[in-house]
Length: 116
Length: 113
Image 1 (cartoon, rainbow over the protein chains, first blue to last red):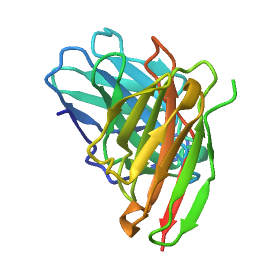
Image 2: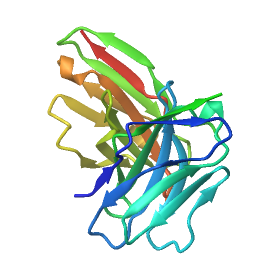
Image 3: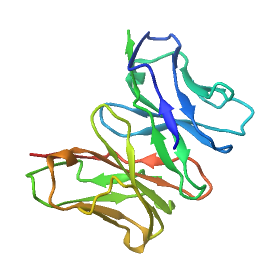
């Protein structure tokens, strides 16, 4: 079974600074995908970024980038120029199952607090 | 695109009662997932539909849980004889063929007294 580990229960960052949220994964599959979701206090899971195991370039989406290190089995999320609205829970996830099915396996999350 | 919607957003019920939740996926998304999230944890997979067919169920889904997706559009999740351990956020997500991203709804927060 696949597993996602997020070792940082909470992170603090000042507005406009960059922050890295850690994620390591465990899988025996050759083909897999990694995701980051943001969950504000309202509860909705907001998709941020996706990285496929065969993608050679690190994924980027605006202020979000995914630092993918395959040999180390890590997929850290980097948020540049933090904003107050970035304060939320952040979950790393991996898809598991056949390509059509694809359930997500989540880590326990990291709570990010951005201070003025 | 309108996003995934869920109804109700909050449900408080007494132990032993039945509850039903509804999920309306994004219109062109034929794949639909239900997850459950308890406090301090990430979401856990419950069940999966491709169109109207329920193709996968987690062992978390006891006999008291049933899900349907008639006509491959909206989906319902029913919990019979609720227990206090059922208290959680129930999240629905949908995905389009050939795309990786699952888009989540706002969730239904269930409290069983």
